Image (tube, rainbow, N blue to C red; front, side, top):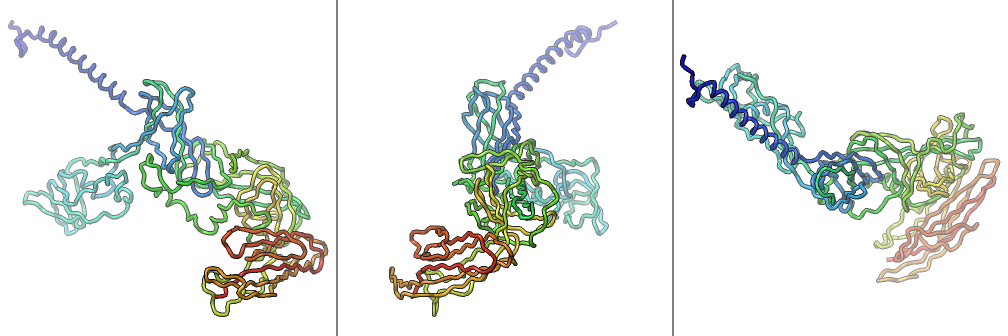
Length: 579
């Protein structure tokens, strides 16, 4: 029997033996090479470092100082992460919590990645399967079969890291497009609006590749080599978290000698998911000089992504909320009804109070281990406690509108002396006998379950007092008038401007119709120099401007008003422009 030979002349048995050995050897080489390539690829793969939010200090103006921390596997002393905060200039920092490892630098860059996306429209489906054979039926009942070409320009990535408009709004109708179908009779060009049905003569591709640019942060350390793990952190001042305070005041006792005061924080998260994060709600507004400038490390030109979700911070309400000036005995608002019996719900002092920490002039309320998804909102009880409280009748009298002293005087210019009969308010005076300040915020007052009024409660330091208006008073009424007593013509000249010096006397008449004395606080704000008060009052100046010709003076009487009538008088002088 003739032995079969292999293609190289070697007997098949021998060829099989030697060939198998040769093929096995080559297979081992290929496997070894493949393992080496895989090992090399594994070495080149960036370490997975996804530090979660661990601490957030939230301010009322929409900014927050964020801290992201996590365990990172170092490769050649570095760790990579895709979590690049959009930070304020000068506030982007990296740090190490490992005792012998220190951060030496931060490096940000953009990397291009490709990912598969499902087609979301006929236009995208035709683009993805361009060249395939199809059978197209039109609204006119015409049928075209063959390979096709899309004539409309393809929608490409913008190249700047943003998503194309068609990706951002997939539900929007696509613009008209044309396709050319190569049929047996020739080439037919169809407008997309004519297409009623598309049949693919084969399996179409339902996914399309999309190139995206992503930001990447490299944290370099002084750790040599690869392999060790280190707990690293990223800190930054960012936009996207905000808190809004709100108070609830519940009256206690017949004479309201104490009240239950609760503070709740409405937390707005438009930045990132928080999971088991410690939140610190900051009382006070720190000064960040560069808060409107973005750090170059963030690779962003603006705060557009999160700024759109934040409300306008320039309205009057926000200015009141952001104000942290201690102004005991001031306020403003609306109210409800007169006193009522003691509430039936008992109060335990300091119940549910969260611990707080202070940092120089700022105070931070703390809420631990809070989870809140991006786009979510939460209301958190920061404290509930009992504070000293008393009834008070409050009257703040402002000046009527006056022409600017630095503009030419209108015809027959005279100091406006119309009556200033504003309302006397029934109010609550709260004493802050705690060790923490109370931030500015709206305060809703209750008697039992009945809401009786809401007012803006101003910032109150520890040990201070604040007056919260409740409702217009009916048991204490007042009247206020002014009268010009003297006018010195051309009393002052400056840079061609002539001023008269006008002396004005004001009279405030109060009437207490109750059968017992009540506490009254009367505040009079005016432009000019106070020369006399009766009875004696506390006089101060607000917003001192050394170059202003008329200072802003404040007179404040605080007294026990017996039943019946009482008169308060004051005199002030003001310069009025003559020409």
